Length: 165
Image 1 (cartoon, one colour):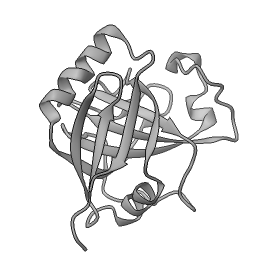
Image 2 (cartoon, rainbow, N blue to C red; image 1 turned 120 degrees about the vertical axis):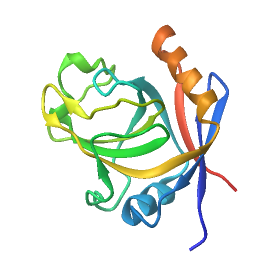
Image 3 (cartoon, rainbow, N blue to C red; image 1 turned 30 degrees about the vertical axis):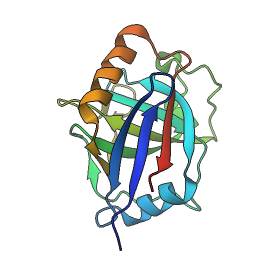
Image 4 (tube, one colour; image 1 turned 135 degrees about the horizontal axis):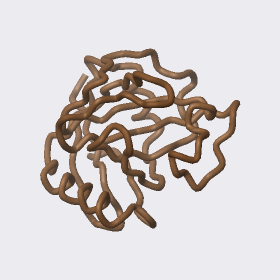
């Protein structure tokens, strides 16, 4: 299979980077994400994992991918996939402005932009993610925009994923 790439962007800030799908390490997850592209939603900056931005989506795969190529210590440039039951995200501490209820599932697509991340959540413990992509171009500019998002806020900003031709 030929290498596949996608563009990840912060739309309002006009910042883009290129990621390579890790088809050899996370084939089920890569297929699910690729088939669902383009994806775009409100961006959030992590509270617990440190240097992470992410967007939440309704489930888009026929069934949730298995935990392939897992990590609890993502490195700069990792794209991770998480699936959460609504009850896991239902506390007000997360700051979501949409209602999250028990019985719902949300997919979290995350970009890690700096080092020293640890996927440990005080409410549920270790939260392994599936590493399905790696930023191969534009990470320094994206990291700068992510730091700005942390300092000035994520309101009205969108995280977008689309196929790169």
